[in-house]
Length: 228
Image (cartoon, rainbow, N blue to C red; front, side, top):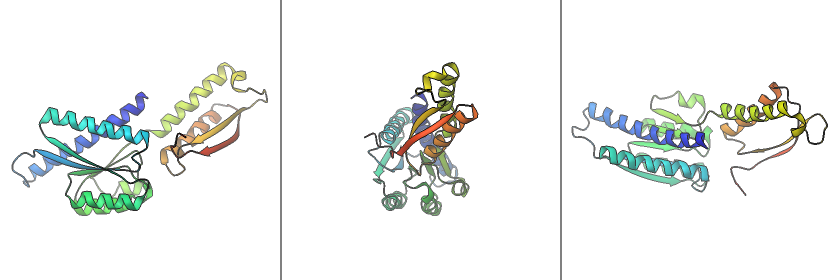
């Protein structure tokens, strides 16, 4: 939970840092002689009803209010929910860019479709902060005004694996309940196309294998981040 809170705060801090940098660049560039009294940011969510994403949204809003209080610069945040539809999200991004927002934050519906957002943002010269769903490496290298905030999924997976590995080494019978010499497990995954879910799936199990824990997978399933 502490790690997740850090991610929420990191995403919020990154947004504000990029916006503040944008203001400085614009002022230094001579586009505006007076200080800006407000900054506008568009936030595109893959699903507004996802509890984790909703928490990130709340932290963004808290950070924006804190920034306003500390600087006197108003932060106008426009949040859009794509409801899991990439075409809808593309249209939302188009609207943000057409309105000339200072930056946009995008939680991609489909991380492999980020090139559309990047192309449009580059044409408009508006920085993009991707979060939670990282575009492919080739896309992120295309422009210096692209950013990503997210977890180290491999680290999380190794921590998971180490917890079970330590339990097994201290008390093998505590995990081998039927005494067949193997640790039987069921694996529930978040989403089949999410990079963090894929990495955590791979490295949690690989850590156990590397630690010499005999494994037997009974079954598994994709839950798509849906608690029910």
